[in-house]
Length: 141
Length: 141
DNA sequence: TTTGTAAATAGGAATGATTACGAAATATAA
DNA sequence: TTATATTTCGTAATCATTCCTATTTACAAA
Image (cartoon, rainbow over the protein chains, first blue to last red):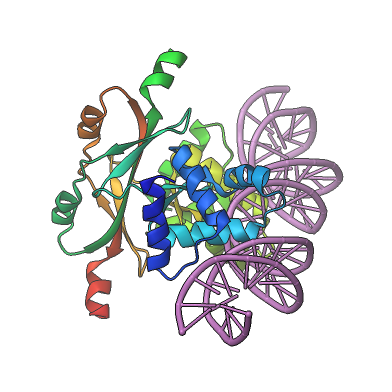
C-alpha cells in the first residue's frame, strides 16, 4: 500500500466511515485512471473483481466519496462522472473529448466575475474546458 | 405579435422548420420566464393550454430550438434546462440558486486558459456562476 | 383554393441512470 | 467476543429522456 492510499483511509476514518474492501478498490481504480468515470464504467471495472456487485454499493460509495472530497464530480454526456480529487489548491479542468484525459488549470477569475456582478453573492462556480489534448490533436490531424 | 417573435419565426423558416402553434407557444413561455426551465416545467406550462401534449413534442422541440440557437441549454440538478438564448455576444451566466433568475456575465478568459495549456486545443468551454441574486440575498439575510 | 407531401404530433412503450428499501452480512469500538 | 452501526445485496421503483408508428398539420406549388 502506498502513502496515498493511507491518506484516503485516514480520511474515511476521520469521517466516521468504515474502511471496506470495495471502497479501497474503488479508490484504487480512480487512482489508476486519471479521468472521469461514470457509475456504469466503474461498475464494469468493479464487477470483474466483485461479480454481481450492487448498484446501491456503487452509487452510495460514489456519493459518499464525493461528499468527503476523495472524489469530485461533474455531469458529462447526461450522466454523473467522478474522478479522484486533486487536493492541492483551487483549480478547474480541461477534459479531452476524445480520450477523456483531464488536465488541471489554475487560472480562475472568480473575483473578476464578482466585481462584474457586484450586487450578487457568488457561492459556487463551475468552469470546464473541452477539446483535444496534445496527443489526440496530433492523431486526428 | 411583437418584433421579437417575428424574428424567431424567421429563424425557424430559415432553418426549414415549420411554424407550429406549439413551437410559438414554447418560445412565448421562454420569453415570459427569464430563467432556465426543465422539460417537466415546460410541459406543465404547455399542458394547461394543450392538455395531453406529448413528451416527444416537448423534448423534440427543445432539442430543435436549442439546435438553431433560439434556446440555450445547461445541465442543472441532473436534468437538462433551457432558456431563451441571448443573441448578443459571447457570454456566460450567473444563476440564482434561490429564484432561478439568470444574469449575463461578459468577462471570459478563454484565451488565458488556452495560454496556460498551450499544447491542447480548446474547442468548447463552460462557465457558470451560482449564488444568490441581489433580491434573494437580502430576503434570506 | 385545393392538394401533395414532408414535417410535426400524439400516445405510449422502452431505455438508461439513479434512488429506495428490507434483509443479511460485516467492520469497528468497547 | 460482543454490541451496534454501517455496508451490502438483490431487486423494485422512480425519473428523465428517447424511440416508435399512426395520424395530423403546415405550407408550397398548382
